[in-house]
Length: 483
Image 1 (cartoon, rainbow, N blue to C red):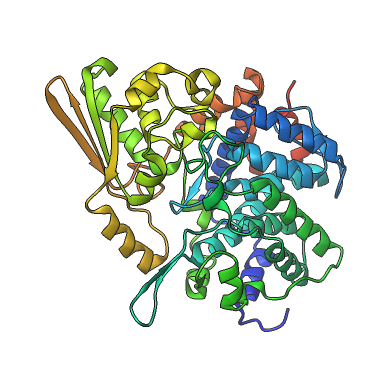
Image 2 (cartoon, rainbow, N blue to C red):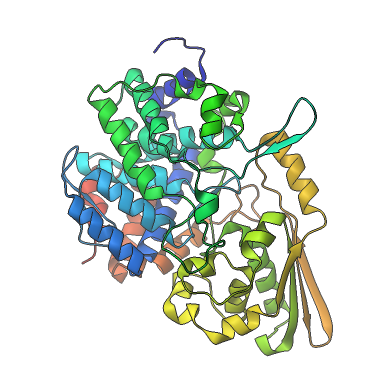
């Protein structure tokens, strides 16, 4: 391994040394919640055209891989763990209903689906799967959370970049390595290879909000990161030597990665004490997380005051700059992604009774004239406090979780308003944290798109008692396959 004082060595020691019995009870429980939520999101996407395509491509890529083939959830497709990881990661992110880590990323797919694929392929236990997902999530999110997107230069100037998600590959490699019982040297090689194959930062160019209706792409190539991360782990497992001590690479590497640097103090802060899986948010709506405060506040107001769409003359949403720029414009949607990144369309759907679950992104919703007509009543503008609040958080911790938001509705000659700084799904308090029952209800809503009612209930029960499962391949994954 080399110098045990390196950041890479300390992260590898954590993932190598920790066993299921070492995980805090809260972490085990939160990991089971993450697995269920992430699998549910993938099942909800099953019948969309893009989802069918990636499942078919996974089948063409064949198997078996490290052991037996693995399953593309919600289908009859069996393929190599690498191919199924890639397909399932795409499915899990497709509806944009998956977890949100520190208001920026959706890394659950990068730990859950490689973990599920290899646990099935090798025939491992639920405890092994939980451990791999918790630790893969931990390593990847620590790196992702330590990447600097803004800093003050010595001269006092602000240096900032949009951000990147290429670090998902570290979660993939970490989860696979744990299931294949890597040595420290194998982890070192796998993480080095994952860094070598990380994508260039193209998310800002391909973001659907900038090019509405043009493609089936999202802001980051999760499928590619999945297959590259698995390949990195499998190469390392065979003895392939990669870059060493990647998390101690010079700043030039991290700038090429799409950031202004890696903050190693933040990377290692409270290592083994604070767990990232317990810091993630869950989404009650299948839409960009930046729109959730507006949706929640609007829904609360129309229910409290019993407002019908025809009662409402105007809606003003006040949020932070990225929410305004990315989610504020009103245009006729053409694809599911167009809906995911539109606050006006989300409020139009909510006004007409949609729960903004998986069904709100189908063709009927995309072309529903009522939603678009209402969306034209919505104005999205900057909140006077958001810029300062978020800037202070970014300088202090590198990420932000507190986001001032306000919704104002003009209806029946009156003005109704509501504001918040945290929103339903955030883990920080009992007021906003999704309960287990709410996570389960969400799973049922999404999973029914692909599974029978009996499979939905049985798979949910198994995932919430996953630590009692002796063999994932026999007791869980058959319940996630299309009958």
